[in-house]
Image 1 (tube, rainbow, N blue to C red):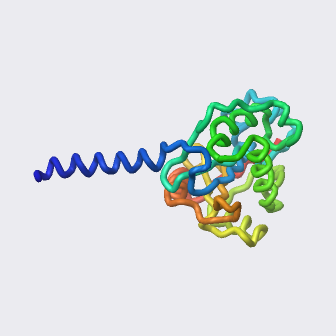
Image 2 (tube, rainbow, N blue to C red):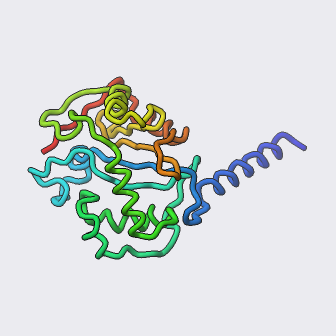
Image 3 (cartoon, one colour):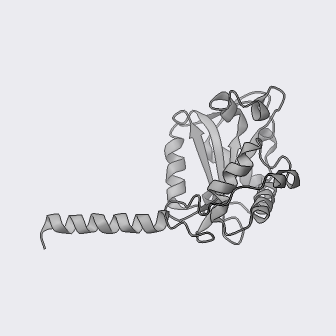
Length: 218
Protein backbone atom coordinates (compact mmCIF):
# COMPACT_ATOMS: atom_id res chain seq x y z
CA UNK A 1 0.00 0.00 0.00
CA UNK A 2 1.39 3.41 -0.94
CA UNK A 3 1.77 6.14 1.67
CA UNK A 4 -0.72 8.41 -0.16
CA UNK A 5 -3.35 5.67 -0.23
CA UNK A 6 -2.78 4.98 3.48
CA UNK A 7 -3.23 8.66 4.30
CA UNK A 8 -6.47 8.79 2.31
CA UNK A 9 -7.83 5.73 4.11
CA UNK A 10 -6.87 7.16 7.49
CA UNK A 11 -8.54 10.47 6.68
CA UNK A 12 -11.69 8.67 5.57
CA UNK A 13 -11.71 6.63 8.77
CA UNK A 14 -11.37 9.74 10.93
CA UNK A 15 -14.14 11.48 8.99
CA UNK A 16 -16.43 8.49 9.48
CA UNK A 17 -15.75 8.28 13.22
CA UNK A 18 -16.39 12.01 13.61
CA UNK A 19 -19.63 11.68 11.67
CA UNK A 20 -20.81 8.81 13.85
CA UNK A 21 -19.94 10.57 17.10
CA UNK A 22 -21.31 14.01 16.21
CA UNK A 23 -24.27 13.42 13.90
CA UNK A 24 -26.11 10.30 15.07
CA UNK A 25 -29.15 12.31 16.11
CA UNK A 26 -31.02 9.52 17.91
CA UNK A 27 -33.15 11.00 20.75
CA UNK A 28 -31.81 9.86 24.12
CA UNK A 29 -28.51 8.64 22.68
CA UNK A 30 -25.75 10.88 24.03
CA UNK A 31 -22.91 10.83 26.58
CA UNK A 32 -23.52 13.68 29.03
CA UNK A 33 -25.32 16.99 29.59
CA UNK A 34 -24.00 20.51 29.81
CA UNK A 35 -26.00 23.02 31.80
CA UNK A 36 -25.20 26.35 30.16
CA UNK A 37 -25.61 29.50 32.24
CA UNK A 38 -25.01 32.72 30.33
CA UNK A 39 -23.78 35.95 31.86
CA UNK A 40 -26.69 38.19 30.89
CA UNK A 41 -24.76 41.51 30.98
CA UNK A 42 -22.45 40.18 28.25
CA UNK A 43 -25.39 39.17 26.05
CA UNK A 44 -27.03 42.54 26.63
CA UNK A 45 -23.84 44.43 25.73
CA UNK A 46 -23.52 42.60 22.41
CA UNK A 47 -26.19 40.73 20.44
CA UNK A 48 -28.94 41.42 22.99
CA UNK A 49 -28.96 45.20 22.74
CA UNK A 50 -32.50 45.18 21.33
CA UNK A 51 -33.76 42.38 23.61
CA UNK A 52 -36.03 44.38 25.92
CA UNK A 53 -37.41 41.28 27.64
CA UNK A 54 -33.99 40.29 28.97
CA UNK A 55 -31.98 43.48 28.76
CA UNK A 56 -34.21 46.40 29.74
CA UNK A 57 -32.56 48.63 32.34
CA UNK A 58 -33.64 47.48 35.79
CA UNK A 59 -33.75 43.75 34.99
CA UNK A 60 -30.46 43.24 36.85
CA UNK A 61 -30.01 39.70 35.53
CA UNK A 62 -26.72 37.91 36.13
CA UNK A 63 -26.34 34.23 35.30
CA UNK A 64 -29.37 33.00 33.37
CA UNK A 65 -30.25 29.68 31.78
CA UNK A 66 -29.17 29.43 28.18
CA UNK A 67 -30.00 25.74 27.96
CA UNK A 68 -29.47 22.12 28.88
CA UNK A 69 -27.61 20.43 26.05
CA UNK A 70 -27.13 16.70 25.45
CA UNK A 71 -23.54 16.15 24.30
CA UNK A 72 -21.43 13.44 22.71
CA UNK A 73 -17.85 13.10 23.91
CA UNK A 74 -17.07 14.49 20.46
CA UNK A 75 -19.66 16.80 18.99
CA UNK A 76 -23.31 17.07 19.90
CA UNK A 77 -26.72 16.17 18.49
CA UNK A 78 -29.30 18.77 17.57
CA UNK A 79 -32.84 18.89 16.20
CA UNK A 80 -33.31 15.14 16.67
CA UNK A 81 -37.07 15.24 16.02
CA UNK A 82 -39.58 17.54 14.38
CA UNK A 83 -41.50 18.20 17.59
CA UNK A 84 -42.64 21.80 17.92
CA UNK A 85 -42.79 23.37 21.35
CA UNK A 86 -46.15 23.55 23.15
CA UNK A 87 -46.45 27.18 24.23
CA UNK A 88 -48.77 26.58 27.19
CA UNK A 89 -45.86 24.90 29.01
CA UNK A 90 -44.27 28.31 29.53
CA UNK A 91 -46.78 28.98 32.30
CA UNK A 92 -45.72 25.82 34.15
CA UNK A 93 -42.08 26.94 34.23
CA UNK A 94 -42.20 30.75 34.53
CA UNK A 95 -38.89 32.61 34.36
CA UNK A 96 -36.96 29.44 33.58
CA UNK A 97 -35.33 31.31 30.70
CA UNK A 98 -34.72 35.08 30.53
CA UNK A 99 -36.56 35.31 27.22
CA UNK A 100 -39.70 33.45 26.16
CA UNK A 101 -38.24 32.74 22.72
CA UNK A 102 -35.69 30.43 24.34
CA UNK A 103 -38.35 27.93 25.46
CA UNK A 104 -39.12 26.87 21.90
CA UNK A 105 -35.59 27.30 20.59
CA UNK A 106 -33.94 25.22 23.30
CA UNK A 107 -36.53 22.45 23.12
CA UNK A 108 -36.45 22.15 19.34
CA UNK A 109 -32.65 22.31 19.03
CA UNK A 110 -31.51 20.47 22.16
CA UNK A 111 -34.47 19.08 24.08
CA UNK A 112 -35.58 16.86 21.21
CA UNK A 113 -32.27 14.99 21.60
CA UNK A 114 -32.71 14.31 25.32
CA UNK A 115 -35.15 11.41 25.02
CA UNK A 116 -37.49 13.28 27.40
CA UNK A 117 -40.87 14.77 26.64
CA UNK A 118 -41.22 18.55 26.69
CA UNK A 119 -42.35 18.84 30.29
CA UNK A 120 -39.70 16.39 31.46
CA UNK A 121 -36.99 18.34 29.66
CA UNK A 122 -38.08 21.64 31.18
CA UNK A 123 -38.35 20.05 34.62
CA UNK A 124 -34.81 18.67 34.39
CA UNK A 125 -33.52 22.01 33.11
CA UNK A 126 -35.09 23.73 36.10
CA UNK A 127 -33.80 21.11 38.55
CA UNK A 128 -30.19 21.36 37.36
CA UNK A 129 -30.33 25.13 37.13
CA UNK A 130 -31.55 25.37 40.72
CA UNK A 131 -28.93 22.86 41.88
CA UNK A 132 -26.17 25.41 41.23
CA UNK A 133 -25.69 27.92 44.05
CA UNK A 134 -24.46 31.21 42.64
CA UNK A 135 -21.63 32.84 44.67
CA UNK A 136 -22.60 36.21 46.12
CA UNK A 137 -20.35 38.33 43.92
CA UNK A 138 -21.86 36.72 40.80
CA UNK A 139 -25.48 37.31 41.79
CA UNK A 140 -25.98 40.96 40.85
CA UNK A 141 -22.72 42.95 40.87
CA UNK A 142 -23.33 46.69 40.57
CA UNK A 143 -19.79 47.29 39.32
CA UNK A 144 -17.65 45.30 36.90
CA UNK A 145 -14.76 43.31 38.31
CA UNK A 146 -11.82 41.34 37.03
CA UNK A 147 -11.12 37.70 37.76
CA UNK A 148 -9.44 34.62 36.32
CA UNK A 149 -10.91 31.35 35.14
CA UNK A 150 -9.32 29.55 38.08
CA UNK A 151 -10.65 32.06 40.61
CA UNK A 152 -14.16 31.82 39.15
CA UNK A 153 -14.09 28.02 39.41
CA UNK A 154 -12.85 28.24 42.99
CA UNK A 155 -15.77 30.50 43.93
CA UNK A 156 -18.31 28.10 42.44
CA UNK A 157 -16.74 25.03 44.01
CA UNK A 158 -16.72 26.76 47.39
CA UNK A 159 -20.46 27.42 47.03
CA UNK A 160 -21.13 23.96 45.54
CA UNK A 161 -18.98 21.27 47.20
CA UNK A 162 -20.20 18.59 44.78
CA UNK A 163 -18.67 20.43 41.83
CA UNK A 164 -15.07 19.99 40.69
CA UNK A 165 -12.81 22.07 38.49
CA UNK A 166 -12.91 19.55 35.64
CA UNK A 167 -16.71 19.73 35.59
CA UNK A 168 -16.82 23.50 34.99
CA UNK A 169 -15.91 25.17 31.70
CA UNK A 170 -15.72 28.95 31.45
CA UNK A 171 -16.34 30.62 28.10
CA UNK A 172 -15.33 34.17 27.20
CA UNK A 173 -16.30 36.66 24.52
CA UNK A 174 -14.27 39.18 22.51
CA UNK A 175 -11.09 37.08 22.33
CA UNK A 176 -11.08 36.34 26.05
CA UNK A 177 -11.86 39.81 27.39
CA UNK A 178 -15.27 39.22 28.99
CA UNK A 179 -17.15 36.47 30.83
CA UNK A 180 -19.75 35.00 28.47
CA UNK A 181 -20.98 31.64 29.81
CA UNK A 182 -20.28 28.94 32.36
CA UNK A 183 -20.83 25.28 31.47
CA UNK A 184 -21.61 22.79 34.25
CA UNK A 185 -21.25 19.22 33.04
CA UNK A 186 -23.56 16.48 34.32
CA UNK A 187 -23.83 12.75 33.77
CA UNK A 188 -26.88 11.16 32.24
CA UNK A 189 -27.79 10.31 35.85
CA UNK A 190 -27.99 14.08 36.50
CA UNK A 191 -24.92 14.23 38.76
CA UNK A 192 -21.99 16.64 38.37
CA UNK A 193 -19.38 15.08 36.09
CA UNK A 194 -16.16 15.91 34.24
CA UNK A 195 -16.53 17.76 30.95
CA UNK A 196 -15.26 16.22 27.74
CA UNK A 197 -11.86 17.24 26.42
CA UNK A 198 -13.60 18.93 23.51
CA UNK A 199 -15.63 21.18 25.82
CA UNK A 200 -12.55 21.95 27.91
CA UNK A 201 -10.38 22.84 24.92
CA UNK A 202 -12.99 25.12 23.40
CA UNK A 203 -13.39 26.90 26.70
CA UNK A 204 -9.65 27.36 27.09
CA UNK A 205 -9.39 28.69 23.55
CA UNK A 206 -12.14 31.24 24.15
CA UNK A 207 -10.53 32.58 27.36
CA UNK A 208 -7.02 33.20 26.12
CA UNK A 209 -6.23 36.25 28.27
CA UNK A 210 -4.56 36.23 31.72
CA UNK A 211 -7.81 37.49 33.26
CA UNK A 212 -11.31 38.52 32.21
CA UNK A 213 -13.85 41.22 33.00
CA UNK A 214 -17.21 40.38 34.56
CA UNK A 215 -19.61 43.08 33.40
CA UNK A 216 -22.02 44.55 35.95
CA UNK A 217 -25.80 44.08 35.86
CA UNK A 218 -28.11 46.96 34.88
